[in-house]
Image (cartoon, rainbow, N blue to C red; front, side, top):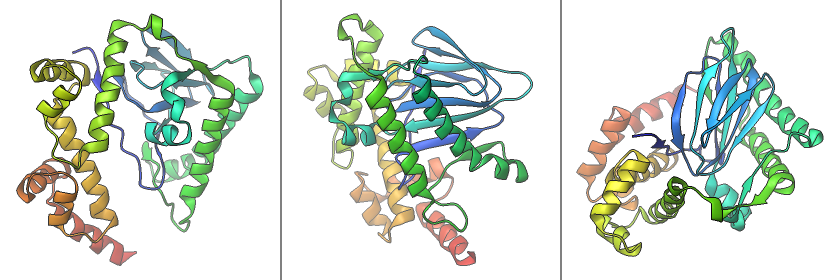
Length: 297
């Protein structure tokens, strides 16, 4: 298979997955619905987006549109630190419902806006890089809170809104649907199918129902979904239910039974087995460990 689909999970109060990596590795060809910005805080890297090669130098930024097939194939040999911000597709659509009709193209001649985007990325890195060096961490996922700052997520969200404003106001262009490649047409279809699953995973939906809804056979759906997404329909559906149940587990007092049924699992056994397979513990044990850690804070 040539590329995979990435399911992007964001913290509860931050509508983006933000990663700082001082020892980045090759990222193989994949795609996701979320908008991604990759910033070279130190060093340089080479990226492929829809077959085009992009060489990103120190303190430069690259943008990956929703549905773009992309990879990062090479980093500078001496040192490299990257900041990746994957802004939730749902967050963008809530703020700009016409997002499916446009894409973004950075114009580096617009120095003032590029400088502002770079400045935001520098500030985000500056909040964490020194602490990473002190604690000898090479990989960090930005969460809602920092020690002694429970309002940290508000600062991060202010950056995300500013990024979205700058992109929409300066770099949004109409999609040219007439020159879309065949593979990209498949990806557009899967964006629609996965959006249906994302909105209905808590219900008792099935492969047959999804295939019927989009007027294709379930055999064809199963085959092309696996080809272009890298996982089966059933696995994608299970992962969506599992990630949602996990958020409920750590942020609510709902019973394990209630978590299972509220998130579309057919029974409690299915939920417990899926949770243990993914997180290495039963949901009971995971919640107990979390409660014990919170008592120590």
